[in-house]
Structures are given as structure tokens and as C-alpha cells.
Length: 316
Image (cartoon, rainbow, N blue to C red):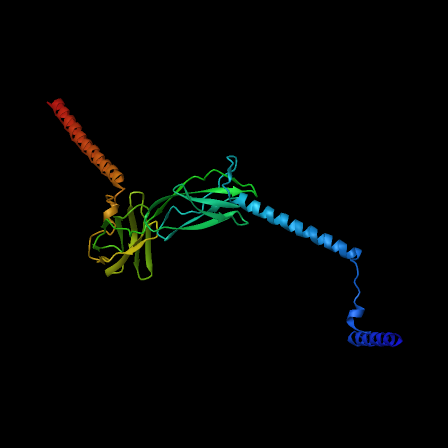
């Protein structure tokens, strides 16, 4: 029995040596020490949890605000409507440029023929601008409404409608009148195009411009001439910006021997359309003067004859 005990003890010593070889005294495992969280670490974890919770709350509020912001704003009739002061009434462009002012508003809703077509941000100076593409000519009713507030938004009444005409048709000259030969150093050109169009007469660096009245009538006076033949180009620009140059030139000859007044078409009797009333007044005035003159002459001869006859009667 004594021998078995010694063998067991020997085996135990061998196992201890193997363990010591496998795990040296200075190994990393022997140095690892499990510690419980300190007070500072607990605070950091609590703060982190709070921030995560707040982040979730803010994300939820953002989603809520976005959904509510996207809804139709509530009408507030006390708000002043924006202005379309910068929007042109007529254009020949591919887009209608809609612009104006919307002080105290965040954005404007743009309406074409009472249908919403866009939502435009208002800049820091209270101005806005939007280009609405149009394919066809015609007249479009433009209006805007101002929107403000967050997350609940309020909208004003629509502004006064501005009728915008899209005109891409070239203007047409319907009438033109001028003398072909004159004895003066200038002449007058009259005619008819369309209301508010500009008529431009050019020769070299000389340029003469007139704007048609509401009936489309125009008159350009004192167009200077050189002695001999003179050739002028004529172009027309309408309100929308459409421009056309006439193929036929204006040709006027200045001849010193001619007795034709270059302003004859307008000096004595205005012939340009729109001056008819003035012409009638002048004609009527001249006729009255002639009538009064004839009456005066007849009265003079009548009184003279009567006086002569009375004098002869006294002599007899």
C-alpha cells in the first residue's frame, strides 16, 4: 500500500509541473482582473441612454412636423396677399416669369387659371420668382397666395389676378404714307400697325422711333434727307418683343426744284389715323373763316351801294 501512495504522489507532482509549463506565472491570463463598473462609467451610460431617448423623440417630432407641414395650410383672411408687381403683362418667351414681393411670408403658392402649379420659397428680402413654361399662345390668369408658420401653417387669400398674354406673332404694318419726292430737307412718315408697337426708321447711324397709340397709329416727323435719293429701313417691335423688318424700303427723293413739302401729309390736313377729329376741326375752322369773309365782302358792297344810291338821290 505504501508503494501505491508514493506513485500517486509522484503523478500529482508531474501534473502540477505540466500545468505550470502550460500557464507560466507571468502569463496574460494570470494578470486579467475582472472589475465592477465604477461610478463615472455608470454616469456615462445613463447620459448616453438619455441622449438616445432624446434623439428618438426628436426624430418622432420631425416626422410629425413634416406630415403636418405637408398638409394644406389653414386660411387666414387677415393676412395681406402678396404682390405680383414684377410680373410682365405680355411676353413672347417660352416661360411666363412670375415674380413679386411677399413680405413676412415663407413661401408662395403659384396659381395659373386658379390651379396650383408651384410652391416657391421667399428670399430674405421678401421677393420671389418662378418661371412657368407655356407651349401655346394665349392669355393666362396668374395669382399667388402667401404661406407662413411652422409646424402649423397659414395661407393668405389669393392676390389680384394678373392677365399675362403670350404673343409670339410678328406685328403687321397695315398702313404707311409718305411723299416719294419733296423739296424740303425732311419728311414725315405716318401709318398704322398695332397698339403700343414701336416703329423704327433707320438709315446709317440715323434712327427715328415712334410708339403707336391705342389705335395703332403712329407719326414720325422731321426725318432728315440728303439731296437726291434716300433709302430708309423700317422695323416694328410689338409689346411682347416680337420684331420684324419690312422687306420694302422707304424711298424718298430730295429735289431742290420740287415744290412738294415733305410734311405736306400732316402740315395742312392731318391724314394719320387718330387725327381725323383734328383735321375736321381745321377744315371746319377754315370754312367758317371763308364764310365770314364772304359775308364781310357782301356786306361791304351792299353798304357801299346803299350809301351811293342815297347820295345820288340827294343830288337829284
